[in-house]
Length: 137
Image (cartoon, helix red, strand yellow):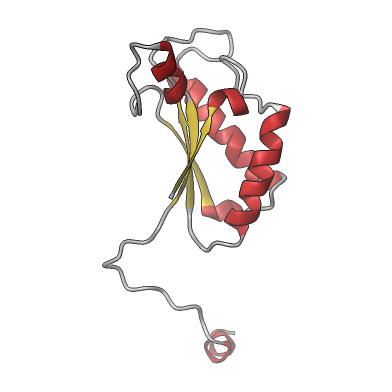
């Protein structure tokens, strides 16, 4: 499952600071994520227009910083367990639209929250029973 959030909802241009409007959406998302046992990958994506600021020298740094900002919020404010989350910055390497148009570039600037499901061929790991926990002590 992928929850795709446009960058103009989350961030100002060339920034990795979360906008106030993003906090409500991320707080609601955290409530859902806390209830799931799944790992979650937060992906930062950019368009193909090079960024060159004093803080970010490339789209790689910007996309990674944005993914990390979302992860930190989900952990620190949303209460999602940190061992369930990881961040990935993809720069402009995974576009979902054509970067030749303004509209396409806008769609490519996003943060995706990807809920990871275990491989269907792996055996599910059963939670330890109370008896098993007692034996491990």
